[in-house]
Length: 257
Ligand SMILES: C[S@@+](CC[C@H](N)C(=O)[O-])C[C@H]1O[C@@H](n2cnc3c(N)ncnc32)[C@H](O)[C@@H]1O
Image 1 (cartoon, rainbow, N blue to C red):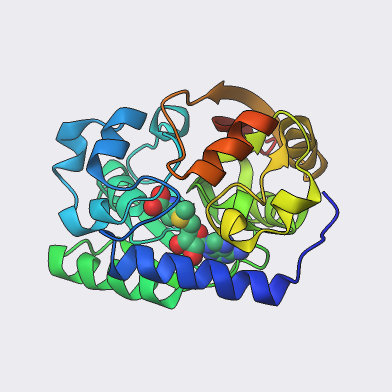
Image 2: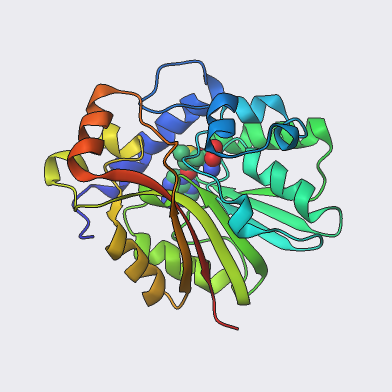
């Protein structure tokens, strides 16, 4: 997708929205959040019971990727756009004390909340790092799996994000993500609406363009499945959804071994 937005301005707006998601999850948003959403998307209640409730309150994901990720004990996992930490904490339980989870996010308030919850719950195998998906603060070929939920649609340069993911994955490593894509290319009035962008709509790429960018980064797409249970809340968001076929998908891709 051609970039038609002011990247700095957009990042300021995205950070502002996700600061509110961290600090005031009871507020009004274009999108749903919290435990009821997580369970509807496919997260197991018994799994959610094992992570901090305050992380679940600020969960703003768009799908479910745990089945595709199939994390194993001892693995190193990168959670891209880790937010308040729900997926990072679930991953930490899955990889166990011999494994490691690195959460990366660009919003200070999300990182602070995730770190506070990690310390309160003694989840010692999780590290949170400030950073951009387009320039990950992670070494080459150092992780077994990258997970990400509701994040890459927010990045203006998705091709750069997928190149970074391919760079940090070890050969044979996998990317299991949930994200928003569209059936038809969005028009400029939607793309240039910063509120819709920060709500995970305006930045969504057309599905085939999205998978082409993954392939161009050197990963092989293995599975794409729709998350039919995801819905936007506001009227403007629903309007765009109907017009352009905005939808949530879960996707598994692999860096060849
Ligand atoms: C919709 S929230 C999802 C958070 C978390 N994955 C969850 O499921 O609750 C998007 C998160 O991605 C972060 N984010 C957006 N664009 C980013 C970028 N380019 N680099 C790093 N983090 C980014 C935001 O700060 C926010 O915390």
